[in-house]
Image 1 (cartoon, rainbow, N blue to C red):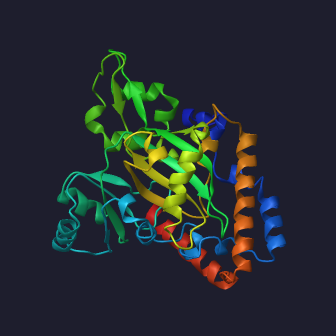
Image 2: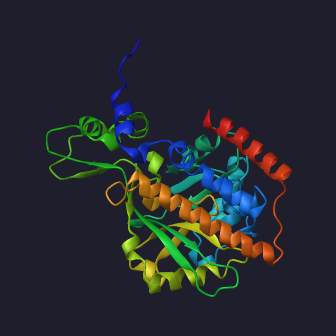
Image 3: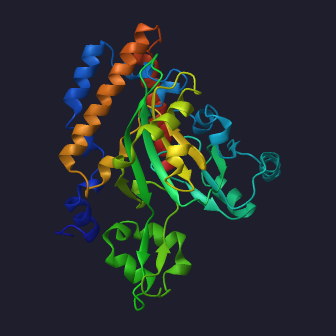
Length: 349
């Protein structure tokens, strides 16, 4: 019987960025309840983005949401229903002009679960066979920058605001000319938390001895739960960036709050709109992910920023309700959440 926490448990305990979501939402629960009381409806947030199912509370189809984007910013993508045959997959890829490597991910997904880069049709079909659920296959965009931009605009306003910009550093280790990749992983707290996943995905890299300063990349999914470092880059926010996302968001009918997760050729793309692709759009469930940078914030500032963003959601919902946007009933919302929980249990097994 273990009397002391494991090394990974100690890392998580000592570093608040790895704490479970309950640690961030339970403390602000009284404020969230107060917003429901003010709104006189538990599901007031469902009025925020009328064009997205449940306003984007994480129960919507990622493929349907992507289709709302202007075509210039959409990556080539196809929807693959559960049970699709290989010949049908090949036909869809051909019609969409998609070639390997590709990114495959669940149409309804969370925390980077089951997101994978596949190199050929055999690997793609094997991945689709893991779970009897719909997937999206998307072009692999090998651009150097991945960024999360949280944007909102009040209904009727021509200009919006950006309240969170998160740049991402993918999981990697740096060689010292002596240690194997496996040894380097065990020396890095961030990588050590991903040890089992890294060994499963990159067994061929474990015995390699990288040279001094050589970077060995160990992840392609820009998700904090997969070891990606989130960097608070709010200092990048300026009028040019806001103008770019004003142009994008105003082309999406019924969209007022959400986070654009995107790939770009350089950070300059955020100010010009050129050379960027939006790989995912999240609605009211969007977090200001800059809060998970412990070098530029604290646990307490993270709680403050979460509460502030829910205040924004409340204000948008109130204005949309005045314009006649209906709310989801409590019964339909409960059904949607029950379906989501059942899906998460199925996918997470």
